[in-house]
Image (cartoon, rainbow, N blue to C red):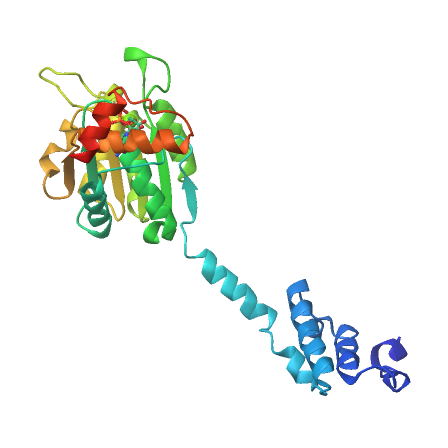
Length: 312
Ligand SMILES: Nc1ncnc2c1ncn2[C@@H]1O[C@H](COP(=O)(O)OP(=O)(O)OP(=O)(O)O)[C@@H](O)[C@H]1O
Ligand SMILES: [Mg+2]
């Protein structure tokens, strides 16, 4: 055992082996595993140094092979990199929309500014069906993702559009349960609907979170005296709490403004009425999509007319 641990390597027997290669063998056969290459990448780097030295007929010192950072600093660097992005992301419940987005530069700038402004807690994107609310938010989310979600700690997306059962019986329960679990609530079954909403708001608001709620209108009252009011106490509590305090941002898309947060409007809750895209944008979008898919234009506007509009 003593021989195994302390006897020097019989390197004198390697007379005909180039000196840099002997140094590499010594490194590979180190008694202390920490002094051996710690990864294939480190070994490849050492081999490149050896090859260069042999090619140039140079001798090398042992230290020159140990210039790669020690394992601790490699781990630290990797951890620091991982810290660039959020701790947790869930966006699979958001609707899938087209990748080509046109004519929304100002709306994207509005969302950028809202995210950057610590006084803005909730943003509501309002427009008729099909105007492009979900497309806009998805596109902006893609830009956020490309920048590691700009310091968001959590990113959570949910679409109420055509989810749950149908018509009037659509409820927020599924969302509340899933979100409470995801954000780490110890027991999502405890409490009234209102209390659950308040709890969820607390879990979200204290850690910089990007919360995306798509297609909220099925849970709001239709035109009438209660127009735009949320029908579910849990969502009322969640949105009212978030409008009052939120270190991140909640982005809502809906066909009707949310009446429950009207008292925060213009201060911590901003509303953006999305404009219908002009025909010019629509035709550009359609022509580009058709070209990408290698087929003829499928726009409802005849191709000759649309070409004329694009040329205007
Ligand atoms: N800016 C855009 N550029 C290109 N195409 C767009 C744009 N906005 C919307 N569209 C097209 O219009 C379609 C409808 O858009 P989207 O689903 O985003 O509307 P919406 O306002 O969310 O509607 P709903 O209220 O029904 O959810 C999309 O599938 C997309 O093809
Ligand atoms: Mg939508």
